Amino acid sequence: MSNWGFFIMRKDIFKKTYNLPECTADLPQLSLFTLLGFLEDIAIAHAEAMGIGFQNSIATQTFWVLTRQKLTMNHWPQVGLIEIQTWSRPLISISATRDFEIFYNNEKIGDCSTRWMVLDVANRRPARPIFDPEKVFTRGDYVLPYDAEKVPIHSDAEVIKKLKVQPSDLDLNQHVNNTKYGQWLTNLVSERKEYAGFLRGYEVNFISETHLGDDVVLEAKELSTAPFSTAFQGRRLSDQQLLFAAQLTSSI
Image 1: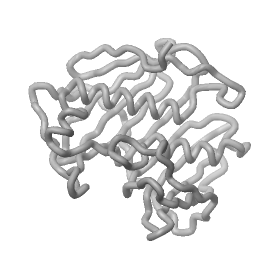
Image 2: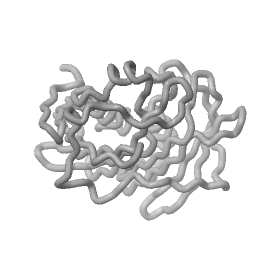
Image 3: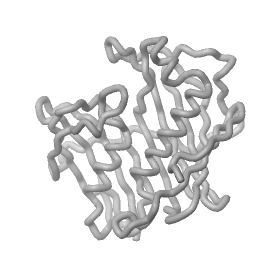
Image 4: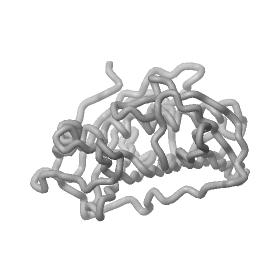
């Protein structure tokens, strides 16, 4: 069965069901990287349904970029299906907020809030979204009780790894896909005992585009041990440009 399930649409809430990948010794449960892929997929599907997806981007010579994300989880399932529901909050200026709720066996196991903006293809600068207001519906009766906020930058973070951006890291806009940053970080902590328990929170700010061939240094700073919390950030080696700032929180 495909990992990408079916979707059901109503005017303000979009739903899609996903089949969890087969568990292995290395991946005994749903992973952060896989979940981030599901969230990206349903966001793209909903945007297409509202006429603000890929075809609209071609017509307007713009594209959507994810700028902030905050995910909280209270359970990572191992087998079966999860349902994700998503909706857009009313547009504020040129910034758009999209919320998600994640369900397993009809119980909510997590949620996520994201912030997006539109960039002009030619100059890569922010642009105002162009869309048909008759097709774009926003949810007004409920939003998540938090926003994806600014993640602090730590000047005293230590370099812990260097990597080079590969072709498989890129998306259609030829910059590193948002899910790859999550994969980089989970790879970093996969062998650390404090993260062998339960990942409860993931926050990230995307600050600058990262491209093919960039040499990136990953930095980290321990924030707390109860719960375990670590700040991460990435810089391009050539010009020391800050690329992203993130935080992972876990408890055993």
